[in-house]
Image 1 (cartoon, one colour):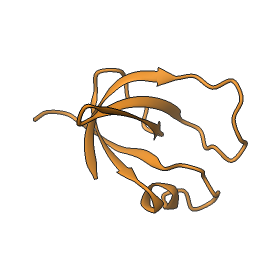
Image 2 (cartoon, rainbow, N blue to C red):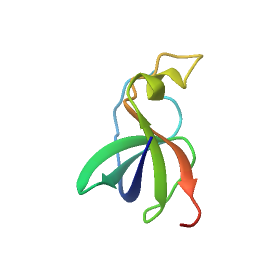
Image 3 (cartoon, rainbow, N blue to C red):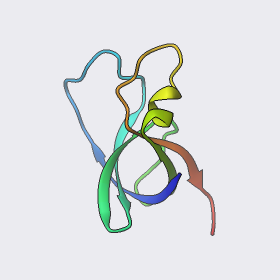
Length: 78
């Protein structure tokens, strides 16, 4: 699990049908930016927790989701 800050949204007018409902967000992690799938409805400026790899894809049990980075929580305070 890694911590990051949402810095923007990614808009996609075309994507594969197996992508679940949610948003693609740009997240800054240790000075680098990644794109993470957000099923929670997080906003720009929020600190979030992300999981990556097979754990992120394995979260979706009813469909095979092509997801490599998944936001699993929003950090309320430090």
